[in-house]
Image (cartoon, rainbow, N blue to C red; front, side, top):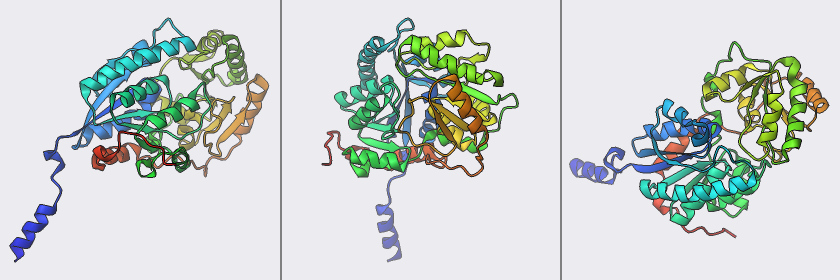
Length: 378
């Protein structure tokens, strides 16, 4: 009787994952900043025996050659999708880039044949990938969906991507509830935290970190206006001899870069994520409109002066001081931020285990049971 009972118990066990064909997980990255966030997810997927990682490099990686960061991190690039051209900027250029991206991602997906495509955020690379996947009949997992952030067209594209996606991996509970109110299936809407939080507990401040970091992206205004706004921020921070980071490629970036050419402050085009986090951890304040000021800075106990409307609507911990553009406004906000007590500041973005949690979900969920055909829940 004992042996027969044991045989029954064995027959009920699930097959070992190593005996099953690994699920093919394609992860799309289009920018250096986004890749920095996705690294822990990629690593966890790559190390999971039930998953097979397929990295697709697209967009600005191929313009600025930051695809070398992907290779340096130890990941193979399985496909490349060219979208932007180095000599094109502005909204019309982005429209053309999206069209090239849809076609390129379609070919990449048909080559890889992924069981799930993972995208993060709201940029045009993500929009192109999501459109190609939805039309091509591939399932999409969207990270950081449900957030609110005004940006250039960030909020519209983020929610559009969410409506194209099949699995939602939100950064906060508030974002999860927003997705459900958008009509997404609650069973396939899971709060995993932000991958930006992964590994921050081990970050040590850089010895050469400045008091102030400036990272201000354009918000789609004219180049003249963007230059004026950036100049005001630079004047407000110059006495701190800040580390100034170059902006992204969004419309208006020419104006921001024109202001940077006129500053005596140190301007850095690119830092790898490890160096960036060490600089951020050592600074007292980050000034500008990057999401890093709201997410990573909160965990690293660095105050944030959030300039302008780009992050309007995003959940903001107590370490954030909002202000309008202009030298006087920014200077006053910096003085206020310098006085903040950050020892007990909290944030809603998870506990630093997002990469592992995403990999485990992808490994254990029956991905084929997630309907390809979308249907609003109301």
